[in-house]
Image (cartoon, rainbow, N blue to C red; front, side, top):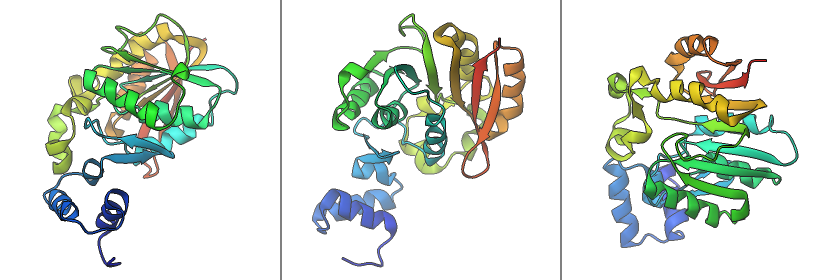
Length: 249
């Protein structure tokens, strides 16, 4: 094996082809060279130690999300805990939580019926007991059980259509636009979460809400006018990335 190959080529060769340079390997190299994300070509990604299958082409898990989710898990109380992973996509957030925290259960909310299958597949391949995980096909909270969660994790579409020019070409050409772009300057689902999630949180519950760095000041003002208060975290690149919110007393 040529040690001078690019890192992505070596990952593909090892993970998908067991080190053998088959005709399929070279065909996949051409897909990568044409701009297709290597995660899709290989067929899976990793997220906090969980294997995340990408057969149905959900949004590829981001390292920025991985960074704050790992930090957020430190705030989850021990013992029986109810968690909601909203806009679940591949299910990476909830599945990582289930793998690392044994006493929790996670409900997954996702609108796309194909991604319902994707989440269920990822629950299965990570050997998670389905008694701890329930998947709901839902438009935000429409079909979520009327109960109170201790924690809600939300990584909604938050890129404004006007900012499409800032998005990398491989993302635009291959990843699902419905998981990336939304209306109202990218704040459509952020506003919906701030308005509706108080009905689904315990009084001491927490909402973790990912956003685009330039939205921070606008979200701060929205939070001031909501039932929430909280703080904001930066990602590993020192960019504002997530609001950590609790209900006002």
